[in-house]
Amino acid sequence: MGDAVALNVVILGPPGAGKGTQAERFARAQGLPKISTGDILREAVQSGSELGHAVQAIMERGELVSDKLITGIVRERLDRADVSAGFVLDGFPRTVPQARALDEIMVGRDPLIVVEIRVPDEELVRRVRARRVCHSCGANVSAFSADPSRAARCEKCGGELVSRADDSEAVVRERLRVYWRDTRPMIDYYSGRTMFQAIDGAQSPEQVRHMLLTTIAELAAGTGTATQPEAQP
Ligand code: AMP
Image 1 (spheres, rainbow, N blue to C red):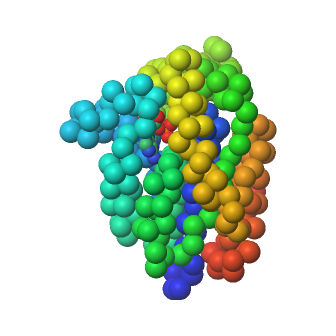
Image 2 (cartoon, rainbow, N blue to C red):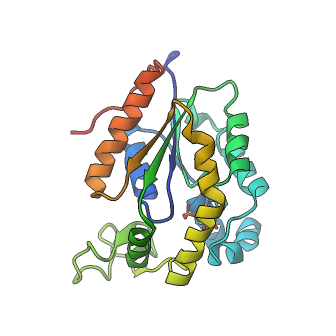
């Protein structure tokens, strides 16, 4: 890759904003690793590891795991060689201390591009209640947009579709409360930066995908970042 500048992207947004789906697509299109702290923690819970035991109850209540624990996981992940051309972070940072820790991890590396996907609360509750995930492969499905006759099975692998344990209405409202309390101040932490931009997430996934791509390209170009995200056909 020579001395091309890495595309280091953080996608922020409340639960249900579509950041997981968008981060996944963007990362795949650019050939970058997507690092989702929610996925890492869910895998730990599923595997029954020590970490999984430590975080399961916290996640089921819709609360945040400790800054120290999650920052350690991310620090280790960003030390791996596969992030040399860049990465897409999804679900981290979520608090001001996590954002500060990330800035510290990034010292001496190429700059961070931070994009927030914004969606009104009531739309988020509606979306999250409709969300199903595949029990086998973990794919996300929106029950509202899916064909009802096929909604019971995953389109990718035929696995059973289930609600996430933390997607009930009470837990969603708690996650939104936590978001406004802990995560909004972190967005204020980034909002003055030239490498930060918010986009409107209350549009179709296709429109959001397009806007995300354009926004990241503009932010990368604005700082002379050599590696540009490539437009998708
Ligand atoms: P997500 O899939 O990003 O919504 O994350 C699911 C759950 O994992 C959250 O509700 C938290 O309990 C936990 N979690 C994920 N990322 C973080 C983080 N950066 N800080 C604290 N807790 C997190």
